[in-house]
Length: 98
Image (tube, rainbow, N blue to C red; front, side, top):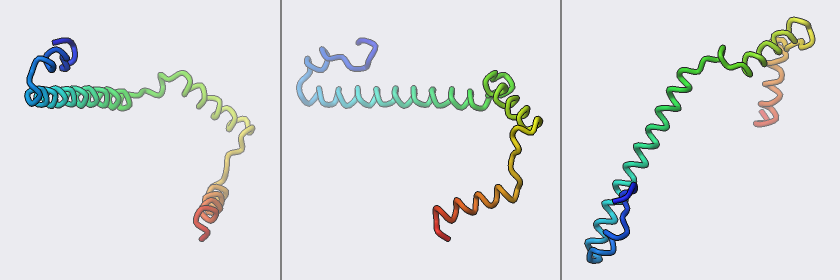
């Protein structure tokens, strides 16, 4: 067999019923391989996101430094809690009309 569980010569050499069973077995094996590979990718993704060290992300730190500098210099005035609540209420009214 080659790298895949699917071997066309093996399918052709068997009788039709045996070929169907063999094909079903091959598809089941391939499905398990795909599922295993998908789980491997998911685990790797979870490990990467669990271990994300933002302080080592130069672009993220650069953006945070820019925001901090703008707030400290007064260039960015920010918003008050009342302004934030008001904007949330306006969006809620726009979306739901209540």
